[in-house]
Image 1 (tube, rainbow, N blue to C red):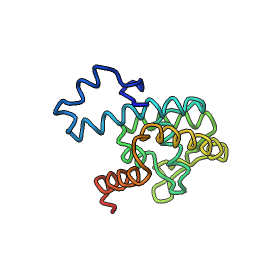
Image 2: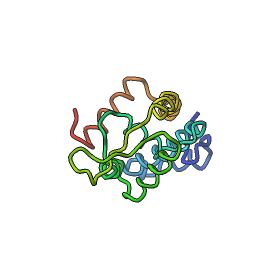
Image 3: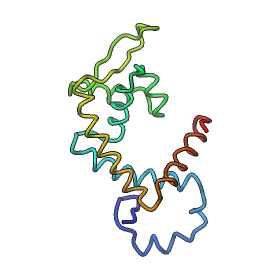
Length: 158
């Protein structure tokens, strides 16, 4: 299945416009793939009452790295108030807890609870399935290459 920004099958208009010069623009390509992938991710995560953003906070809180709310906001390129709302929701559900930071007690770290870790196991499978669907036209080696290049562009990893 070829997906467009609404997660629907490709249509005649998309076939027609794929020849436009914008399809060589990196920003456009990344935005379009993200939009289509988000539809698939949110659909897959709905069974867990999660969306991409809450899933991202949960997976980072389960990393063992004890991120602060500020670090989560910076890493996910979200406004701190958005992180507070996401953490509030996850905390209400018993999936994460806040604690004073070890370095700065005013900074709140966010850590997954046992229930959050358990939910994450199944949610991660659903998210991986959605990713595979979004990238189904690529081989496993191509997917690995794309991920490596994006990590390098973002953080200099090789």
